[in-house]
Image 1 (cartoon, rainbow, N blue to C red):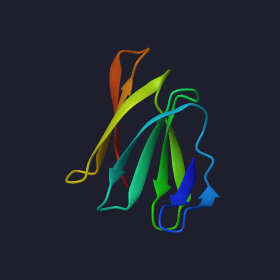
Image 2 (cartoon, rainbow, N blue to C red):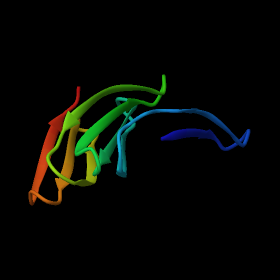
Image 3 (tube, rainbow, N blue to C red):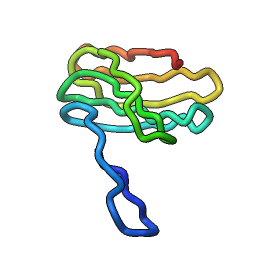
Length: 91
């Protein structure tokens, strides 16, 4: 994943988040971006201030849709092939 400065029109850097990123969700309160990676079947967590990866959580095969609830700090990931919703608490 790349970080783009739209004002300066340049790439600030890239972050390795896994294979097959599908969707992302933001928790503005924690300054965390969550990315569901269907190819590597995991959830990447990125600090949006430092632009550094914070960790990776396994989800099961084909992580797909994602939603973050900033009031509870819960992250919901639809796991397509398992037919489940994985729930993660952050931090």
